[in-house]
Structure formats: C-alpha cells, structure tokens
Length: 425
Ligand code: GDP
Ligand code: IMO
Ligand code: MG
Figure 1 (cartoon, rainbow, N blue to C red):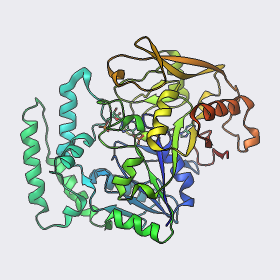
Figure 2: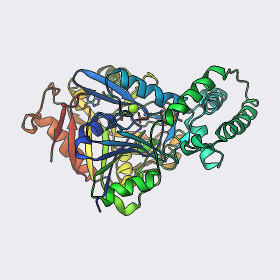
Figure 3: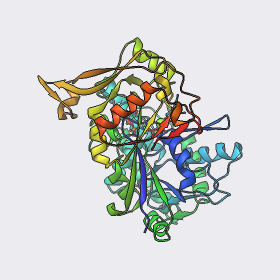
C-alpha cells in the first residue's frame, strides 16, 4: 500500500499552502482537504491568473488529479457553489469533468451558524477571537454536540425538517444575544446551493481514500489554517475549531496513522497572524508594516491586514514535533530581499527563564523573544530558478534553519507564481 502524504501550515495559517499543493499536484492522483472550511483562503497563481480557493482542494487545476473534500471539513454550500461558479466562469469546471467528490460525513454550515459566530464575537467585544465569521466554531460545536447536519443528510426525504429543527435551536440561542438578523435571503440561497451540492458525487471518504491507497495511487492531504491555530495545541482560545495537525488528516479523511508518509511542513521566511491572540515575535512598528506591504499581507478570505513579525523557532520546533514533519518548505523568501538584517527568534525570556518552547501561559504573560541577527542577501530572488543562483546569504539562512530545526528544507518559494519554486534537495 502507498502512504498518504500531508502538507500543512506550521505557523498561524496563510503560509502558502495553496500554491505548493498546486505545484505538487502533478505528483498525486488525489488531493484531499481534511479539516477547516471556508475560513481558509488558498491562493494559486499561474499563467498570469490568480485564484483563491476556500473549500475546494488546490489540486483542481491539474488535469489528472482527483479532489476530495473530506469528512473533517465543514462546508458552506453557498460558498462552495460560488467557488465552483467562479471557476466555471474562468473556464474550469471540475464538476462537469468529474474531478471533485465530497464526503457524505462532512458537516454543513447553516446560515444560522454564521449568525451565531457573529453574535458571539460581537458579545466578546475586545476579547473576541477575530474569527473569519464563516460559522466555523458553531458548526464544529454542533458536530461534537451531535446535532449537526451532514452532506449525506441532504438526500433524505426529511432534510428540511431536520434543518428546521436545528434552526429553531439556533434561533433560541440567538435570542439570548442582542443581535439583529434577517434570514430570508440567506435561506433561499442555502436551499438553492443544497440542490447544487447534490450534483457533486457524495462518497465515504474513508473508503474512497483507502481505495486509492490499495490501488497504489498517490494521495496528498491538504491542511488548512496552521498548527498554531490547532484547537488542542494552538494558542487556545485564539484558535480555530479543528485539529490542523497531521492527526487531523487521519480523523478528517478516515486513514490510519500508519498510512501517513511524508509530512511537508510549510512556513514563511518570517511570520504572520490574522485575528487575535499571542504572537511573541510581532513587530508592531514600521518594520512590521514594511513586511506587510512587501509581502501583501492582507487576508485572502477577509481582506484583513495580517500582523507581521520575525520567524519564531520555538514555535516552529513545536509544530514540527506535533506533526512529525519530514520535509520543510520555506515560502516568501523574496519578501526579505530588501532587508539589511533579518532576525530569528531562537528562545523566549519568560517569567525570568530562558525557554525554547511555547509556554501554557502564553495567553496571559507575553514571552519576550530572544533574537539572532542574520545578514540579509540584498538581492532580488524572484527570478532565481536554479539552486546555483540562490544568493550565498539566503543559502546560509536556510542552512541555519535546517540546523536549528533538524529537518531539511526541500522547497523554496521566491514569488507567488507556480514557476517561482525551487526544489533544493
Ligand atoms: P494559504 O492559506 O496557506 O494557501 O496562503 P494564502 O494564499 O492565504 O497566503 C499566501 C499569499 O502569499 C498569497 O497571496 C500567495 O499568492 C502569496 N505567496 C505564496 N508564495 C509566495 C512567495 O514565495 N512569495 C511571495 N511574494 N508571495 C507568495
Ligand atoms: P488558511 O487555510 C489564517 C484564524 C482567524 C481567527 C481564528 C479563528 O487560509 O491558512 P475561525 O473563523 O476559524 O473561527 O477563526 O483562526 N484563521 C485563519 N488565519 N489563515 C487561515 O486559513 C485561517 N482560518 C482561520 O483569523 O484568528
Ligand atoms: Mg490563506
């Protein structure tokens, strides 16, 4: 049997997962999303075109590759339909080509889940999570609370009754908030999208993926969000509501842990975070603003400005440990092209101690990063397309990271386009 490779973010999301899944997809027969939902925004650029995918796996542009939305994903039918309509308008129709299947066991995001997300954030005021307001938290709550509706339920004769029952519960919950809403338009769009959802083949993702493996076919699991947003291991409560780590690929697709092969851990040459919560290396100054402008660090889903800071090695080590990362992928090296000096956080000073891990009380006591200065390469690397052309100082930075993190960097990304990708080892 072949193994399932996994590609996931090691930071707080937006590392460039979509771009690299697209680059690697010719090597795979199946690309499968395993968690999260339309809180994700995965950007792909090629042939002068740019696409942002929210629910659809990033293998969709490869002619040969099948794409699965796994059971661990939460699906907003309205957003999924819009994504597919936009793709169709751009000349890509994965449904007509039979290149997309959805897990029956994936949970549905209802319009009222979004309302609950918004009402809850509004009530929290300045302590809010900074959620994407896509209804992710409330949908996963209904999943674990055993109330949720799943893709497979849409074909049952009493689907509408089940929907109404859940919506009544949500309305009751909403009555406890001082929150105005009108559901009429959203509900109509929801049921239209549900009809559309029925035209996409529904599968049991556990049998589907294991079937691929049995036939010796190759599978890549595509993570959403990032390790530091994992509901168990991230900076709780400033996290998302799913397991974004390798373990999430097992539960989110129905594969056994011993079926996991390569684990590609992807990170930016610096670090960003969108939404609330701790960020030890954050640069709340003109250096951070410079990273934001040069790196175009504005959310692919919400357009929000991303918080920017230096690379955080204790956080990366933690993420590598949790995921069993076998190869690293470094993104956005070009964003640092203009810097005389860049910095890497090697340790934290925390409660009078020097530590190299993320402490439990990171939420209440901000660790002070211990920074190592690294000479910049001061070269435009966006057109570098041979390993031999990588500036020596950038090669030194990569070698430093490999030594600190004890995992090889296999790919280096020097721009948003597909072709701006180098294989190093
Ligand atoms: P994802 O959520 O992990 O797929 O990442 P996003 O798409 O949210 O954010 C990554 C952003 O960086 C997108 O705008 C990409 O087009 C862009 N990007 C990806 N790789 C590179 C790179 O190497 N250099 C630059 N400058 N931009 C990149
Ligand atoms: P991709 O896949 C970056 C963040 C939100 C918020 C927290 C909880 O594009 O990397 P949620 O809507 O999930 O309840 O929000 O998680 N967040 C992301 N940040 N990239 C993402 O996805 C994110 N998905 C959620 O900003 O802080
Ligand atoms: Mg993103």
